Amino acid sequence: MADQELTWRGTVARWDRGLFDAVARRHWPGADRVLPRLGRAANHGVLWGGAAVAITVLGSPRARRAALRGIGSLALASATINTVGKWSVRRPRPVLDGVPVLRQPAVPPRTTSFPSGHSASAFAFAAGVALESPGWGAVLVPVAASVAFSRVYTGVHYPSDVAVGSALGVAAAFAVRRLAREAERARAVPGDERPAPGVPALPDGEGLTVVVNTASGTAGSAGFDVLRERLPKAEIVECAGEELEAELAAAAARAEVLGACGGDGTVNAAATAALRAGVPLALFPGGTLNHFALDLGLGGAEDTCRAIAEGHAVRVSVGRITPTDGSGDGGTRYFLNNFSIGAYPELLRHRLRWAPRIGGGPAAVLAAWRVLRAERPVRLTLAGRPRSVWLLFAGNGTYHGTGPTPRRRDGVGEGLLDLRLVHGGGRPGPRLLAAAFTGPLSRSPLHVATHRHGLRVEDIPPGTPLAYDGEYAKAPGSLVLAALPDALTVYRPR
Image (cartoon, rainbow, N blue to C red; front, side, top):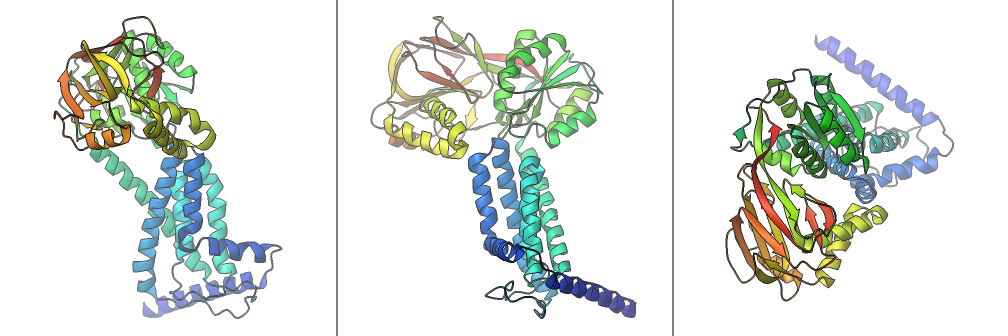
């Protein structure tokens, strides 16, 4: 056995050196100028960090999530290669005989040769992005392959170093995706919402119409594939933009069960269509944050498919916004997460305005600066009492955590509004920061928190914006907020 192992190692070493020498002898026009520079650009992950920044600035929410996954994959691959990998094998670097001096690095690497850290980082980042956003992945994979090849071309790695490093990078990307999914599922803890008896069980999806918002963060990726596989007879309608509400309304009118794949804005529109049509709702989380789905206890498309096949659903509460003077944008609206007037809607308005031109990340920073610098408190009447407020927040159910706009709930079946108020006066920045340190249900000169079934808001200045579930609209002159207990039926597994 020992002799066979030595023979096998000798064969691999000869093949490795032969291929290395063949690359060294071969001249590719232009490669001497491009490949060494590309390899240097990838030193310490600088190339991939720059790519992540570019994707974050230029890309969609789904692309930003892909960039984050790519950086996580690169970090895992780099940490593994530079600790366990290189110090376990300790393979010497290739002898540079035959490699043109023009290609050789000015400062030879001091670490061991096997496996290639540059190749692992390149393919970890490219694969991490591609698993979340195939379009950006198609752009990055050729760059990653060029970086990997440059390690052989410049004489610092054998081909087997590069091949194994690239494979480990791809493995790191799959590992990070698995960890991310498990972490997301761990966040999804079912609450004590009441069961909804009598909902139809659809083992193969017949009678279900799912409207997929193709502009959402991750719609069309892995969760979408699970939907097609587990519920093959479900009708799937893909749309985006202004078509979404019309498609949801039409689907709710003809389907036994309305399904929606998208983020919180899509879920809000789907819930509105389901409420008006009186049909159950099936959610396939496909956004960047998926607040409502996680608070409901849905960890992914697999959970929803299982609930539909079993015929198990729960009743959830909904917040309702009813204009009382006929002004503003539209009529009655609903919210599953939260409603707000004041600083946050202004921030959202500015971000939506600038994001198409400069990207979501820079737009959010610019919007925050604009709001904290220039906005004024809103003067209105709450429950018959005049108020000056920086922020009025109403959550559908009790949120945990301190501050005026917390983000986590134990469930969505409580049937109460979590009301939080940051009083006006001074500047919004200090006020909002100070309010962030006051606890839930606390009372202070800055921040008030309480629970109510409803709230009347009057004397709202014309043009004042409001936000609900991440959507933006102009507020009417007066409105009534109300919690509707057990208003909506949503599929969730036992």
